[in-house]
Length: 104
Image (tube, rainbow, N blue to C red; front, side, top):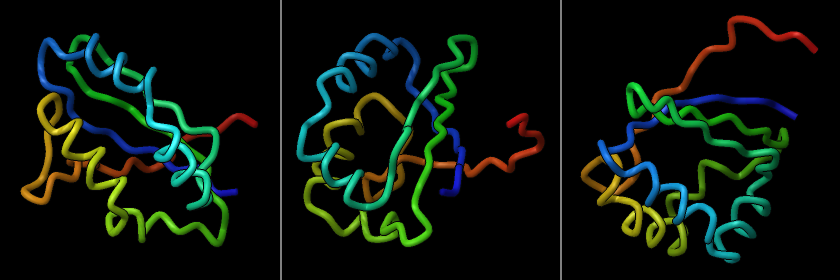
């Protein structure tokens, strides 16, 4: 399993709505992520900066690169687009983070 981390930007004043939407995540989206090889996925919020920090594990044969092609993923991006920074195609602006330290 590979562990990756990235950050995204939440629009100011949207923390409660972001949490609510993820507390009610669509079962079909959860299944899609798991089918793509994703597990142990967490997102944290830095309330001072509105930066979302995400970390997940994925299998060596993951299918994350195909997620943007799925209708469910595109609908989720549209659903979330009003509360976070996105690209023109609706996908969230994601900045990959490099691991600098790990204590197993």
